[in-house]
Amino acid sequence: MKNSENHLDTILTEVGEFGRYQRQILLLLMLTIGLIFFSNVIYIFEAKQVKHRCFIPSCENETSPYLAPWLMNAVPFKDGKPERCAKYQQINKSGSSCAISDFNTSIIEKCERFVYETPEISIMHDFDLHCDENVKKLAFVGTVNGIGKFIGLPIAGYISDKYGRKKIFICSMVVSGLFVFDSFFISGAYASVFVLAAELVGPRKRVLVNTLMIFSYGLGSMCLGGVVWLLQSWRLFLRIIYGLFILSLTGNWLMPESLRWLIMHKKYDELSIVLKKIAKVNGKSISYSGLKKLTETVDETETATYPVNELLRSRILLTRCICCSFCWIACLFVYYGQSITSVTLSGDAYLDFILCCLIEIPACVITYFLVDRIGRRLTLSSGYTLACIFSVILIFTPTATHWIKLTIFLMGKFGISITMNVIYMITNEMFPHLSDKHCCHCARCLVELEILRYHNLYYCKSYGSLHRLLYLLS
Image 1 (cartoon, rainbow, N blue to C red):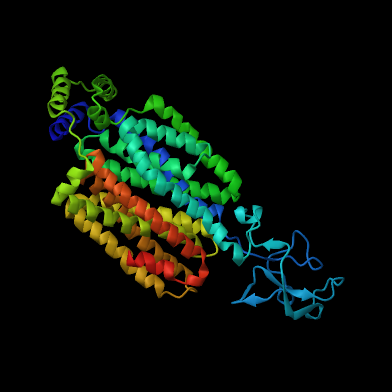
Image 2 (image 1 turned 90 degrees about the vertical axis):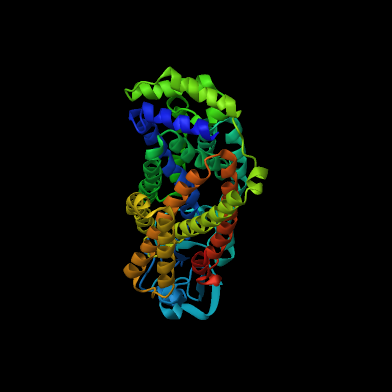
């Protein structure tokens, strides 16, 4: 298989490593990758705990402010903020002054209605999940999301190996857009899109393509975060964002199948058509002898496969796979952990989330220039070190110093974004064969289990800062 890969790289260089055709396809993939990432974290807005307090019938109406002048007479306060689900017993229900004499402060009652600080609407409103006893129900949204990915990742890897990267990508996007087991199917699109992008360009342009894909992560998430900020209604933004998934149907006519998948399955006619189309759009020519040599090389090697048992027999490959899997677990746990907690840094969750996505863009640019100068391993370890240092500092930063805390948080996200970029790059370079990547998919499944636990700790405030310590340890 190595010879056929070398010949394919030679032909890609001949027809244009990163010509007009590749740029068009890459633009399409970049537009979808932002949607895919946002679907991984959108539940933090769906299940957002909007600040609320009890509605006091005789003291206010539907348009009353969240913090009224008389509020301390009617509602108990904690740390300078009104309790979310408790109020004092009202003695005088006919009075409108709401003086302290109108309430019995020794008796606490539960709320029947609520007043919200902001107009945003989450599932907390529609399903009446307001108080502490319902926090775990809100966390269940993220739990189901993680379970879907845990089940979907290995299945998507197997199906895409058998039926093709493009098919699983398009089917996953369309089915997810129809709200059918979204987290289960989106795993297939997520796993396929990076492979499709990397295999379409020549070897010297794969670092650039990997960087552009991660770049579109941040840029796309910023734009979608702005959409959510503008709409502030979970039903409305879900309909709009997932509706965009349906547009991926155009990929059936615009995108080619994975070139290496075509080689492995001996689909030489389709491979020849794709390569000739690339050459034509790029204004290049492709030699018949080059195509013939490629197919002959594949026939000679009988499209060698690399089953898991061969991986287990190779000490070098096994060691690499274990190390790479550990890096995946640590990287994605911290990366998604910081994305989840970004909405808790200040009063404006949307701005913090957008800034958290924005910091990924300079991280991508710096990674692109570093990896070929100081190497993959040093860049990877530098990203981990930055994330670790700023995570430690963040734990001991006073809550009141918001902008200082936000800056430290963003520097930690900057470090882990560098790591995220490099780990994708290393995986594709170390494990070019499909079955080798399955081990890394298994590692991603372990990450989803860890994120499930992290997500529940994040919502259950009784655990304090344990959720921050978890991704520090990672």
